Length: 442
Image (cartoon, rainbow, N blue to C red; front, side):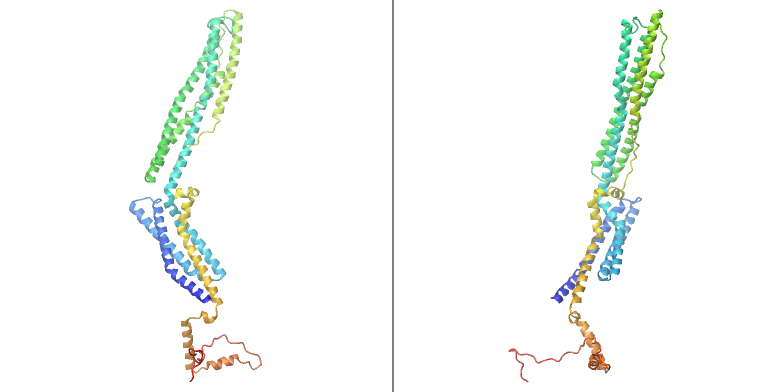
């Protein structure tokens, strides 16, 4: 039973030898083809130079992979010592790392390079969209001050009108110094209000332009065709969008509002009381002092609000960096694990065949060790041994006497160790048994 299993295992190993060579050749060829496609995506120059360079590199990769795994399949299954197996495994690990470095990542670039570049463009669009929104919010932040400025301007104008019509502040009607001061403060605030309103139109125009750029970039990302020309057009739009975001960031009027708010108090010039009577002059001075206090308080509120807006972190300038297919598949490797697995499997699948052969040879050796010597010796080995025996007999050597002498006890009474040489003498043939189980008569 063991002999039959051993023969079947040996026959199976010999039968798959051709298939093993064919599988290694096909896998090496497939790796070379995808390596060629990956190399072409990272080389620059004329079409002829790129073709020959990629072809030579891919051929070298195919030959290296085929030779490496052929050597491993030939040698590793027959190395039985622990140190030898450890050394071969170390060499196999080093070879696998080198194969991944020179071929697998290029195979992954060929399998998922275009998708990786599109992933890079998609994430770039998201980043630019976030930058555009942030710049738009920073630019419109000063618009939140517009209601306060408008309310303060209307209040000063209303007090000016009331003072002129009914003398609500000084008790004397007419257009005096108080009326002129209130009208002046209202006019300054209206100018600031007009400046903020004008900046809104500019902000909205730039924001609309930026949205159009992003829409174009999204169209380039989703359109069919080769990725290289689309990436070039995308890069042009990205540069233009960067300029739009920078202009939008510089459109913020918060700094101008803060300076104008500071000027309301620091640049406040109180007019001389215009009253003809001392009592009126005194009342005008009191009202002017009150207006100064009110202007200072309002100025501080606007200045502090503008300062809070200016404390917002600005949008950092973003520069679009184009990536080749080979570089993109490395940067976004975690997003393309199936492609990486397929690329690596093409190159490292022969390791499974090597281990299968090693297990088969180890099992075959164990089975042969458990069989008797007569079952392990082949017919060719038996014939060769018989030829040696006949040559010794012809030369005058008495093999039977030597065997008896080796088996007899020594002169000192101690039996010598039996010889481990198997006698190849054929035993005498016995009488042939007849059909009824009896020996025929002579």
